[in-house]
Amino acid sequence: MNQLYTHQPFISFYTMAIYFDNSATTSLSAPVLEALLPYFTQHFGNASSSHWAGREAKKVIQSSRRQIADLLTINPEEIIFTSGGTEADNFALKSSIQQYNIRHVLTSKIEHKAVLQPLNQLAQAGRIQLDYVQLDEQGQVSIPDLTQWLEKHPNGLVSLMHANNELGTLLNLEEVAALTRQYGAYVHTDTVQSIGKVPVPLHAVDFATASAHKFRGPKGIGFLYARQGHRLPALLSGGGQEGGQRGGTENIPGIVGLTKALELAITHQTSTIAHLNSLKTHFIDEIQRQIPGVSFNGRCQSFEASLPGLINVAFPLLDGPCSLVEALDQRGIAVSGGSACSNLAGGSHVLQEIPSSFGRENVRFSFGADNTFAEVNEVLAILTELYETEEVSLAL
Ligand code: PLP
Image 1 (spheres, rainbow, N blue to C red):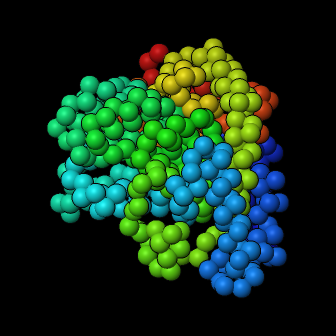
Image 2 (tube, helix red, strand yellow):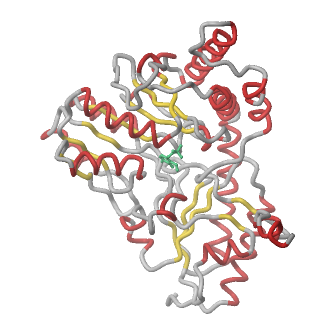
């Protein structure tokens, strides 16, 4: 019996549980669950089958692809479904490098590991020369440095993320992509944190990636956008699905869920941005008023230069046995020190590039559409209490 209780989710032990980690993942919204459920039970066909169930499944994929294309003002054939953002990034990078015999790649040190790892592997194998663009202290790309690189490597590939998952910093994608393509180089951008949340100029780039669980869709489904004219060799070869570009039986409940989630995200994008930015403004104002010595990592105080609802705060160090992230977790508040993945990989490689984070308790708060002012106030009260009762070791 006791055994059973230990397997209950931790959440049930808290009187109040608050989730401020929507950049790690989001909850599936009720209309999305409703839309996808019948595709597990009633409409379960394999789209490659030649009978009625297969034809029905194929139609669902076609209409989902068209709907996504309409929502993003792109062409249906520019979408290749994948198992999520990691696969889409690997696919875009490895397959474009192979297809176009690319030798030089420019990226940044604050990209997601789904970009850095495949590029490092290719560099270590001697397949590419990998360079890193200069960043300023807030993680913004240096345009003069990018330009200098492009002058040397006009046939290269530039991979820079649209929205940074830890800092929320937004790249001026139109400017960077126009400059890169003007030299003749290819542009890949990781748009996993921006698609559905802010407008994304997909038409400006060659390759972009998306993952449904970041915008209230299911986990395990995403897509690669490959601009018309690019035909990439499959990363996963098999049964020739996705026009021969991605083998594997299609995840139809996932595709239906992704489509519905994207439709909802884009339909309500303006009001969601307004809500998230008002939560953010309130949080930033209050935290500065209530806790002396806080500062911010990245440009989260600017609406134009950062994702709505994401704030990376550098707090004074707590003089206690656990980190601030752990102290908040013990009180039922889910936040993140870096990204969810950096918890696995031993610290944040992103914050290592951001001097304002050094020697601080760094916490990423990422709000979702369902978060409320009451929750923000509750967390502010807990933070204030923590800093009143604990010895603050940093000289203020
Ligand atoms: N790229 C970025 C910027 C992310 O934040 C994530 C997820 O954390 C990924 C890629 C990986 O996406 P997925 O979880 O769908 O594999």
